[in-house]
Image 1 (cartoon, rainbow, N blue to C red):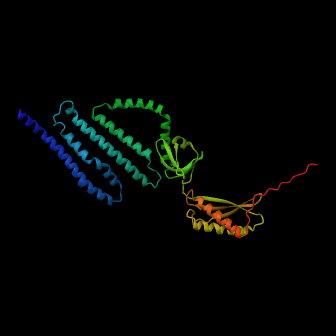
Image 2: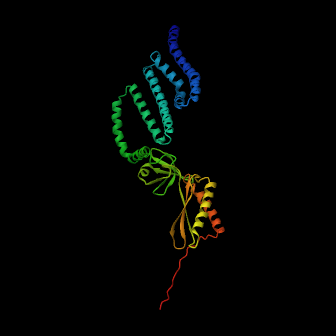
Image 3: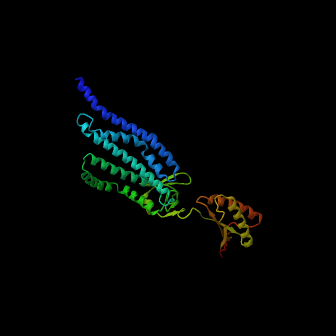
Length: 346
């Protein structure tokens, strides 16, 4: 009896040593090789190697453990049915681990590639989630195949179920494909400042599979369904460049010297451009007379702002300085005047 127990114990020694050796090798790979490769990758210009090493870091020891367990699974004597499926379970866990690491690697590569496109194709959650779903689906199909589950029947059932789900989630799928259309057509991009025909305006924060998030200048968050955004009339202030025209209407009395008015206004406008951070210094302000109004001669002053929202300090400072200077120069800004003629009844 004792010899039988000792014999069984010796049968367990090689598999256990193999598993322990696998874990130890995995620890050495992570502790020495991976650590040195990480230090070397930080010195390179390409960030892809950093993403790869970061994606596999937490899986290295687990991979060596599962690989060694798979190799000795036929040598370990368990009772049925665990002994029969030990190798398949180890392989299945290895497939899942590789799947999650691959998902993390591909999403990181997508972000890296998108950053290199200078914002022309931004990586948002809608794309990273699609990549994760695709990779996990492939991993699950591989796992089912390794467990001798019929993938063909599974795909058939998935297709029939998918048709029913698509009918039930018609609005959700419409938002999903609208989000893809918005990103691929570059109608709007994260970071753009936009205004919708319904009045909402703000910075595009993110485009998810269901909603597009706007952050207003008051820091409020507005969520808009993608299907509605794709059909809306949008004014994008950042389509070509962030700068835009700032217009300020002004009116002076009819007896004013217009050459003098133009000269004084231009001096004030130039001072505002020099002193206000939101104004583009390389762009000279323009003064243009436009109309003979009821009680004044109206003209417009045009500035170039750096981004939407910079017009507020520009207009604020210009109105203050112009009002003060006009008062010093005796240039009248008339009140609206209307002459009423009253006829007496005979």
